[in-house]
Image 1 (cartoon, rainbow, N blue to C red):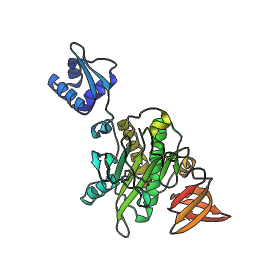
Image 2: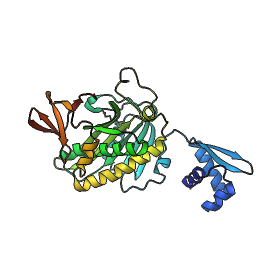
Image 3: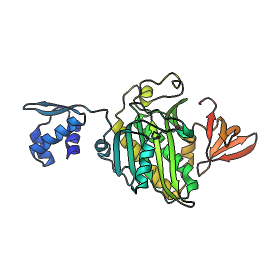
Length: 320
Ligand code: BTN
């Protein structure tokens, strides 16, 4: 019911009376009044004027599971959404819940993380204004497929950012989303598996959304949606868009187990066609990134010798 009052307020340009709301939604005036109070508690500003009714004047910049789930019709991802004001790491929270038997589709989102994790043991600083979340999936796949699951998730996030903002977001293989030369999003995937099958995967995603500045040391390498568009983003509706895309892209990926549309991936991958240096297992490999295989590996051409790599830390000339 709460959502319906919200929808009515959002779709009305001006005031709407308590009587009209109660008739339209088929509930009592008291139920409408309770809903209005609950929305106010969630941070919505609702003006109430005698003989005129209610008018929504602003929505909160606070993440809300109720608002994100409003109108979200997905097959798996986002079937359960949990928003936490604070957590050590959403990846660790999802891993704890997965170990306790949580079904796939759970999305845990946090306003802040006290121990946010990046790749290669780095810290992921989780300041206000971002979205930090982890998605739980339990695909029937061998553990060797984990790298391509990360790529499929990255593709989904990249497509969602493009759709929601119109920005020219690109993938920096394998795990980052960038705008121009700057990082907007990082992905850290963790897995629990037997020798032949995955038990679960926690796909952790951090996106810089409403950050207005970055510390000096990362300023030249990091950006946010706000800095790129000049507009504050409604994080709840943005999250709804991201979850929808993850649901569509991952469900088709889990059926075909290949980046079906690898040309789409290549077209969105800023790494392709550039000079790259890859660090892996203590060794360095340099060459031109020529393409992506169906299972998402990077093809590197070093003076005519082609090497296919599945993971690693990549420096791309002209990016970072
Ligand atoms: C990277 O670029 O190094 C990956 C960063 C991944 C950060 C996200 S934020 C949500 C989730 N929880 C974590 O602790 N890390 C990931």
